[in-house]
Length: 306
Image (cartoon, rainbow, N blue to C red; front, top):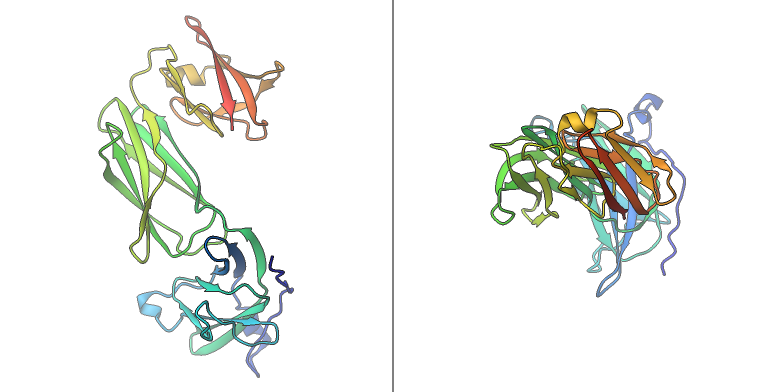
């Protein structure tokens, strides 16, 4: 178990640099995560800095991590790490786990070189990049895909892919990714559907180095509602549930849908699409009952919250 020291924020500037220049330090974040596998090592994430554009190439972050005492940290192969050039406003560094005093950041504002210093805090276990991905029918003819990343490292873009059979997927849109981020980032994409029917969606997550990874597959049903719910999806669920067969009128008529706990307590929810609801996120995990009654149909379903 590695004990990492954390220090409070200290701001460093060049000798003679005015106090007004110190205020130009960006609100950056620096966290380290312990990665375990065949070997154990640490990964330092830096995010939130200025982003260099082609017309602004000199304004590139130069990040120099230092251990206690101000000396550079060694890399995994034993070499001395000096600087990381991070034009995207941040970057990552892999190193042998040890105490890090701070990171020093240099960047240009015009022709003035600004130096800043930031503490490094512990991020815990390395989080999963994609922490949530859901699809729902936004209108009778449009699907909405929403997803959240808990951490991003050198990400480039998300390709939204659709399938009519759950096997053969085509890319229907692209969303630019955050790059390197230490905080949760929420994304969404609206897809006009070619026809009524059932569709499957997934994300192809593309990194700056060209590596790709697929997300889980989510399901959207746009068949014209019949007023009879044929399926609740997903079940088990985490927040949103599609009522397959219900119409948007069914969902938006007060009293047609009620959700109860096992003890009979009514649970709050809100309508988030043409055939989807989002159940109170504070509701604990366990079994629930959903009652659907639109005046002609009376149905009860069991729901399990993970």
